[in-house]
Image 1 (cartoon, rainbow, N blue to C red):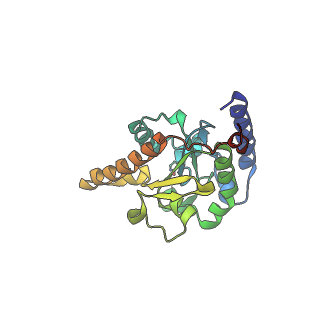
Image 2 (cartoon, rainbow, N blue to C red; image 1 turned 90 degrees about the horizontal axis):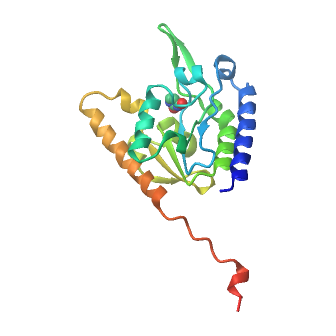
Length: 219
Ligand code: URA
């Protein structure tokens, strides 16, 4: 990877972040404090895709910086990855909320919000071209594989993601944090199995490019 390639990716991502910040296709674009575009290594081999920013992310304009983010950092460390080595983003870039008697609460983004935000995510995938994608939680998985995706039955397997990139789906760290009693360890064990598969995929030798035609005919 040349320095120029890295610089170009940074440039394209910065411009895209400006466009995302200006986007008002959805109501949540007017309601959020910050657009949470994404962050990390523009040349990352692993891209992590969550659902959408929560309150802390909305305040700081950065993905996964609340409690779920702390757990995500630990999950990455468990497979020898630093947060700065991967690229972290979400299916939607604005915090989706609903009014409740006890105040503003996070909610899952709706299908129209996901569709409106998709060009930003597609561009991130195109620019970063990761070797592996890790999707966190059912809303992220459903946004790629449809509403029939059942995370409890279908996580932990490889799927073909956008651009043919292998995608693993695991539980969202916020879901892990919501577990109580004996469930915590059972869910953590499942997540650990999924993460080990991600590590193994990243450790696979890169595919050998076919020899160029010209060399086939060299004497
Ligand atoms: N949950 C998500 O899905 N994304 C974040 O950025 C934070 C919490």
